Amino acid sequence: MPRPLPRIMVAPNGARRDKSDHPNLPITDSELADTWRACCAAGADGIHIHIRDDAGQHLLDAERYRALLSRLKATSPDAYFQVTSEAAGRYDACAQQAMVRALRPAHVSVALREMVRDPADWVAAAEFYHWAAQNSVAIQHILYTPDETRRFVAAVKQGRIPGTAHQIQLVIGTYAGDPPALDDLETHVTLMRQEPALTFDWMLCAFGPQETDCLVRAAELGGKARVGFENSLHMANGQIAKDNAARVTEVSAAVAKVLAAKA
Image (cartoon, rainbow, N blue to C red; front, side, top):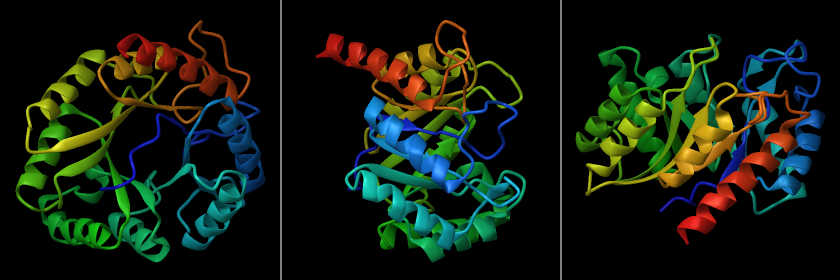
């Protein structure tokens, strides 16, 4: 069994935003390290990591990841560290898989839609998923729509994605400004609950000012929370957050109330 997903995972920068979006959005490795220390103190027990090149562009690089992971682990060796394999318009599935194979991270997020853009991609994708399982690389599968959740379940049943216990990242809303749809979240959860032979450790990320409210609903449904400037710059009252730690503080407190009420 893979290590459970953290209760609160901070996603402090993502692949697209920069300092013009928020002056406290971390870009450099040093800024990420400082941000992680602050978010860890604020209640985050995991971090979703994006790195950038010298021009501030999204980067997939095993050696750069390895160096940053070592630096972050020095602050909190027992925390949950997850790297991204996101394409962000710069990489194809072959390059994404090659980075993961070179790094062999303990935890990585992988979008089903990026691994399988065409049915013919399943040959390489299935081999990659099986390689990850055999090499203790825990994949958190990113699913954007209920239809993708249906496709994921079908792939598991077909043996293309091995195992019966899976970690899932559900996404609602978009960078383009489409608001998060809680109806879609409910559908995702219903689809997972209809599979008694499978178990799902799942987390939600929600784009836009409704992030806190959406993550509270996810906690009510049994999910976990990914929070941070990758997905939203806003506090629940609509104001712009001071920094990632402020977002973690708010969401951590809100989720704690839900869990206390359920206990």
